[in-house]
Length: 67
Image (cartoon, rainbow, N blue to C red; front, side):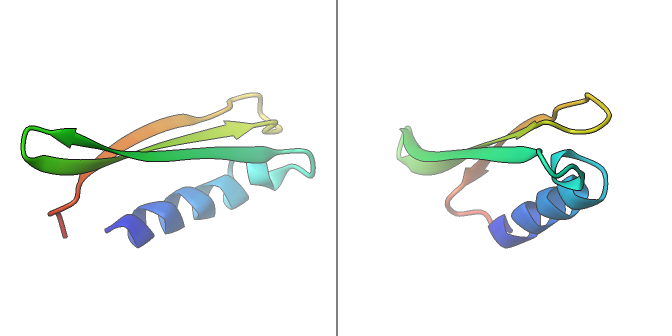
């Protein structure tokens, strides 16, 4: 699931977002946290410098047990 999510975000950034511009860039932050007795992974994807001025900010949380 994680690889599909990252592939979709990267493809969209290249076609429509920050990576369509030579000066565009992406910041990706990831960390894990415990919620009760489950471990979750939190990803934050930020696009900067897109030509259309619409910098994206996407926040995704995944349970370690999800497939």
